[in-house]
Image (tube, rainbow, N blue to C red):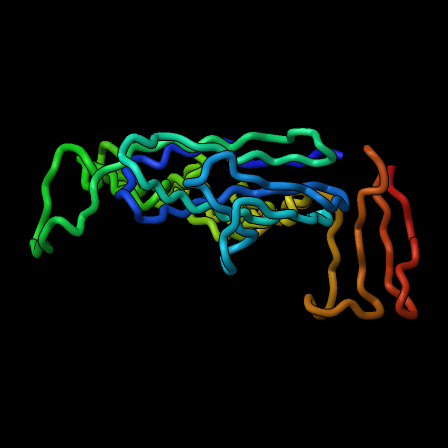
Length: 250
């Protein structure tokens, strides 16, 4: 049974000495696994499961057909430090090594506050067309008509072209995407089933569709068209609380 780890590398950029910088990676599996070990290989990296609780040098994670987030805090204490890693193992087998690279600058407490109306710079946090937020970024296209968000995993969303609502995972399994090019809506559920609503109102589905009087509750006299093979469709009607097969289409 495989365990998926995403992403497996982080370029954290510049980090202030003695100030924590938090990132997270995802662990997922299709089955039920316990005793997954996540351990830091460097004292500057500490770990916790999820977004709350204390950090430690190692944790044990259990997965049951799900994805969990592992939060990693990077706290450099010397300007000579520039890298670190975290290892994921199961049954003494290394599943993945997550690598972190960065550079360290001296503490900002040595400098005064700055109050400005605008900042113009060629490089750094405020560059020509990109604003960096932690390990993610928001950038403008060359024409200046589309805004892009790039997550730490490298997945990029074009905010000017499409808008997406998702489950917040590094690689979303469930999402709703509005495509402004063809005026369609794409709904993906659990990374397996997709529904697309075209501009003309037609609905495309991967597996089955239920036509019912109440979309929130199934009831008697509802109908279901279900893919029952590579080239076979079956029509059901709900009678007495159960789906009864009525006809099979080849």
